[in-house]
Length: 122
Image 1 (cartoon, rainbow, N blue to C red):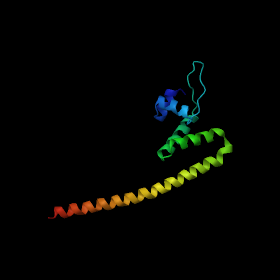
Image 2: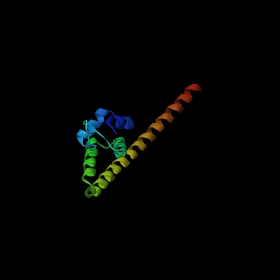
Image 3: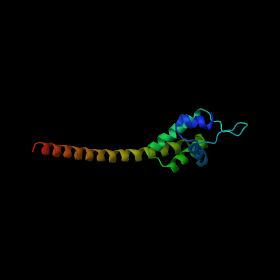
Image 4: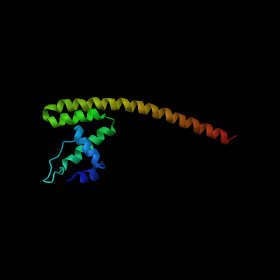
């Protein structure tokens, strides 16, 4: 798969894919005789996964660290698991905070609805 096909399949720009290679988020693919990048299909699942890590709020430096650990092979399984566990705990704490904020907003919305109802009856 050429870089333009990977870009189309992932929604990332060609420049972003090149940047991901540069910082180590994705491995540089082999090149064909003309020097063009040739990706295998497995890169799509990997890019989806790192995109999901990004969506969870994992910092880019941590995603790069995770990618480097992954590239190092099975000897890093424990370190990768521990990284994901730590990030999962951060997410759980954020979810608690978000739930509290949501409850506050729900209360405020109810309060304003009540006030609006009072002014209609006057």
